[in-house]
Image (cartoon, rainbow, N blue to C red; front, side, top):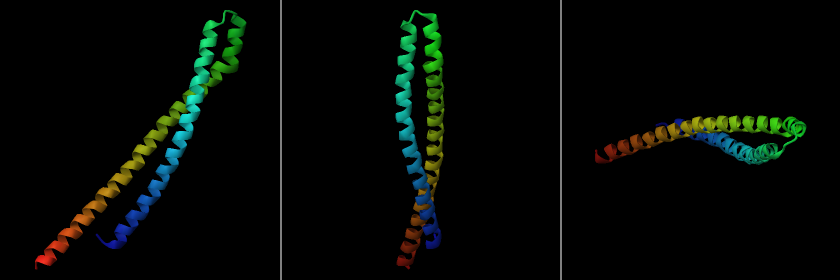
Length: 117
């Protein structure tokens, strides 16, 4: 493989790894926020189950449960999207590595052939 091709692939791989690092950071931040909303949602759900006053239940549902449930669902979907992005970009890195590895194998076999001659 030509050195300029190899260098270009390495640069591209670095760019993709930078994207992956950003996705990882966003994933961790979202995961932490999801954990908070998981607690908020579950606590609110338990309080509603333990409350007898229908008016209070309606108020709690409107004020807390519905918004927490909505945010919880949004965060879960966003986590899934980030996982998919990570998987796709990781495929790029894996494919680039495979091509670079094959390029090295070709170089090595050419060197071996020329040394035998």
